[in-house]
Image 1: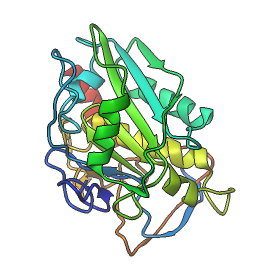
Image 2: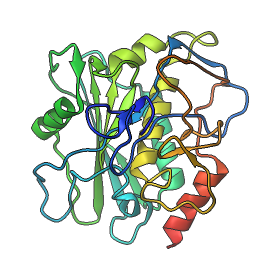
Image 3: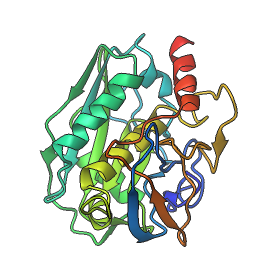
Length: 277
């Protein structure tokens, strides 16, 4: 993404814009929800435009830019199943509620006969105070186990135990099937509702936002039907999970009623058109 949700070490995360797609966060179908993130300039998610590296699967590139495999995610012609692999460093396993909410989001918006949520797997700490996009890619290369094969599209999610090299980033989409989440920062901004969002709410929102970028939103692999894009591949609708309007000096606040934001009607229209294309 172009705003503080893009990875500054490349050309598309928290601040700069990624080659193919950047991204951050906003809120979707929800009306009264007091999500007050007690952090100045909190960046809920970010996109990272990767520099291509060696690919493990000869039939499908897993090292392309976020959004470049939007059709593979949205349609069922080639891939009728989606496998979701999740790895985490000690102390940062995503909650079961988070994973349930992610499954619901994917089942609702993707044309897949089956969403396969693998049991999260613990991996060793990277023993770093901060992780760059390059660090994240190296960890994936060492630990990822599942790749797209046959009728199954595989996606990868990594929860690390420290912050991103850019302050306030909660997540990045750094490859066409890969997302990373910065567990320490997520824990720092989470708390007890209503004064603070629950950890599950933050995790689920960030995961949905990053998968939205893998799905080509906004206008980054999935074509807009009407103009609703601003700040890179993000939505103009403040109630959409793909919305982003923050910078490092801003205070971020949204209204929360206990539900996790979803795609707005414009993003849903884009997704539907792509599925029917």
